[in-house]
Amino acid sequence: MERFKMTGPCNMNLIYDEKGYELDLFCVPKHYEEDLDRVIIPHGLIMDRTERLARDIVRDMGGHHIVALCVLKGGYKFFSDLLDYIKALNQNCDKSVPLTVDFIRLKSYCNDQSTNSVKVIGGDELSTLTGKNVLIVEDIVETGRTMETLLSLLSECNPKMVKVVSLLVKRTPRGSGYRPDYMGFEVPDWFLVGYALDYNEYFRDLGHICILNEKAKVKYKV
Ligand code: IMP
Ligand code: MG
Image (cartoon, rainbow, N blue to C red; front, side, top):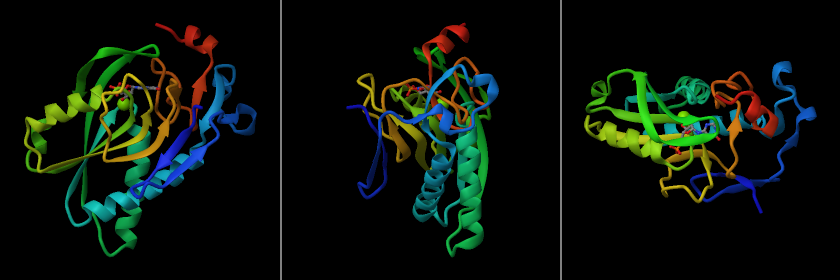
C-alpha cells in the first residue's frame, strides 16, 4: 500500500493516509483548480515539519558557521522557510549558527520525466565553498542522481563538511540508494507539484504539495 511518512532521527515515523486530502478542503489558486487531483502535504504541515528540521540542524551544527546552499529553482521555498526557522532559533537559543547563503541552479527534468542528465545552469562559483561547512538545501530526492552529481562537484572544492537536507525523498525503484542527512517526508512514487516544485515551471506558486491530474500533464506539456 502506498503511504507517505515523516521520518525523524530517532526512527520516529508518522504515517499518513496514502490518499492525501480532497482539493475542496483547502484553498488553491483559481488558475490551478482544474489541474490538481489531491493535496498530498498541506502547507501548514510543511511548515511544522520544517520548524523541527531547523531545530535538528541547529542542534547538530550549532556553533559552526554554515553556508546554506539552495538548489534552485525547486528548493527556494523550503530554503527560505528553513532559514527563517533557523534565524528564529538563533535569536532564542543558547546555541546559534552563523549563516551565509549561496545558490546553484541545476536542471534534470522535462515534463514529468527525469532526463538522466543533470546540468548546472547557473549560480555562484562553487570554489567559494572551499573549507566551509555546507548545508545543501534541496526540494526532492528521487533517483538521487542530482544530489550525487552536486556532491561530487562540491568535493572537488574541498569543503570542510557537507550535509544535505531535502524536504522530500521519493520512494522509487529507480533510486540509487542515496539518502540525505535530513529529510522532511518520504513520499510515494508520484509526480508532485507545489511549494516551488514545478511541472515545466508551472505550480511553483501553489502553497500545498499536490498531485497533478492527467489533463494538466497534457495542458502544460512542452
Ligand atoms: P533526482 O536526480 O532523480 O533525485 O531528481 C531530483 C530533481 O528532480 C529534483 O531536484 C527536482 O527538481 C526534480 N524532481 C524529482 N521528482 C519531482 C517531482 O515529483 N516533482 C517535481 N520535480 C521533481
Ligand atoms: Mg530540486
